[in-house]
Image (cartoon, rainbow, N blue to C red; front, side, top):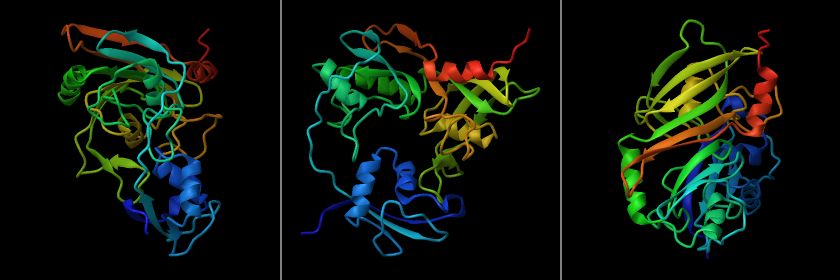
Length: 312
């Protein structure tokens, strides 16, 4: 009996990915999947190159044609896991979590353990069920390698109230980042450009005319060594990879970004230096505006100290 297919895609390899390992390339396209899960798909011939099965270490060639079939996931029970959480605030309606870099927010194909949801299910008896079994309590998310603040909903009333605030863009979300380049006489500005899936490369989002409206307000905080800048970005909208895409679009990609930045990073980083440091919203029960702040994490501060300019 043929396995039921959830998703089927065909991808043509472009020049900028020639020479990459197949499994590594696919892990960038599908960041919600673990590398081991992708390797399993290759081994089971759910992923073919030019109609033929290959090994995970296959090096991509120009114009290779990838055929990808992602099977419907088995119905699994997401298990609670005793994973330490950095809880900034908690009451009967919400939790505010300071997520570390490297933690996936919710389970997905090939990544059912070690996520924020697994940790939340251990900590909380009840979470909002609006987003289903895989995403209980999750009203918004940040990328795996972005650190910082997230609000989690414990009940559907809170979830609906916060979803409405996200939809009308009344949530305060301020990020700190280190990016390439200086800003000269224009230390602050706004990028108001639509974002959608990049048609020639499925691992990327891009500024595209048929995308959804996306608005990022940025400000240079200080110049750094090696032609870098410390910046602050305030989100007006919240599209996938929004800050990373917009800053790359204006030629200031985020340091360490493996998708939208330079291929070679001058430092040994595990992802983009982007931190969700301020989160503010109206409390779903009281209606009172509350705001939370998170200090820069150790991995961010380590690079920042290396790049600080000695002004003495």
